[in-house]
Image (cartoon, rainbow, N blue to C red; front, side):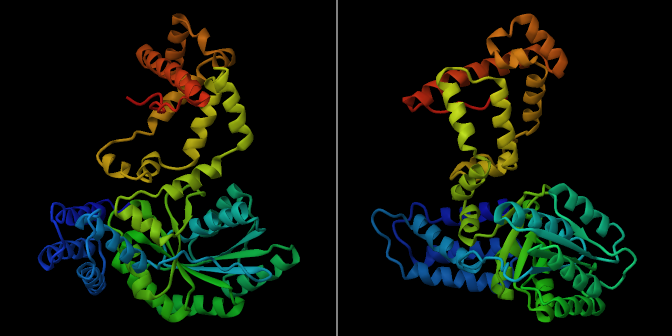
Length: 441
């Protein structure tokens, strides 16, 4: 995300490199290019100008220390201002009440129904809530069925009333049902339209007045850029919502919506959603997003994602096997599954400071995982537990069964053996650098 914007801002700040001090002339050129980058990222011109005016004012008032270059100082100033622009601090979702009621609003196609399921899964698994989803989109034929399918995938019940075309009534009845069955959280998915219209706004307003939600979220497609900000303003005037959810952020390389909404609508971004998988939802942290825009990585989020998949007992078991050089293909397959659960590999690597820029033009083909899995799954259970059994004839059979060449199988097994040896030394305290993952050239 934000690839183009990151490149442009990085290029602008680099113009200060080699300068002995910050001056009005070199700051003016840098700030002008940053403003252009923001406008090209679909940030409103007035917002971009006010932002860069603050950057210029701060830069001219700062003294450059001997140990800090003008470029480093400018990066710090831009980081601070980007963080402020996007809201300064994370904003928590309000899940108070018995039950806590969360109302979702937004245009059709914004990813609202998918987000409803993602939020339900998040609250269930991360907060331990007993969640009920409510299908109040009575106009889009597939909406109710879509919510049912998603609810089944995450093990969350979906309240529907077949034949009832009154969303106000459906939402009210759902809350009564939640109280009876002791669900502590209700998420109401409402209808969207292709554009803002009076009928739509009247309906969502009636639903809100009827159920009095503790939290009203506006779900918006981040790829619509400045249009997302304008739509947010229209909804906020009628609903006075509590926060914004940005969906499809992985498909937006410009980032105008993420940068502008808090500043222009005066409501915080609470969640960001990427991809179609139901665990691809994140709390919005303005400082972490600013770090990623400036190519500084986001190591905190990476560690959190790893911890979510981390199993202490499994880690201890693996450590023992590594020390005895007993790490086998079954263990490797489990580790591969954990990495895949963390998300897109290129996005994960981009969270490591300095790596994002290095990987900009590198194609990290996740099909390599499938190739490795196919090779391992073509082995017999005995072969997976005993890598040393893999003779030439066995490798030939594995190659044929997995749809790979004998050379590819040999390469993977060689890399696996090297990795196993190094991991044993590393576990023993040798402090050696971890090798590249098998399957990568």
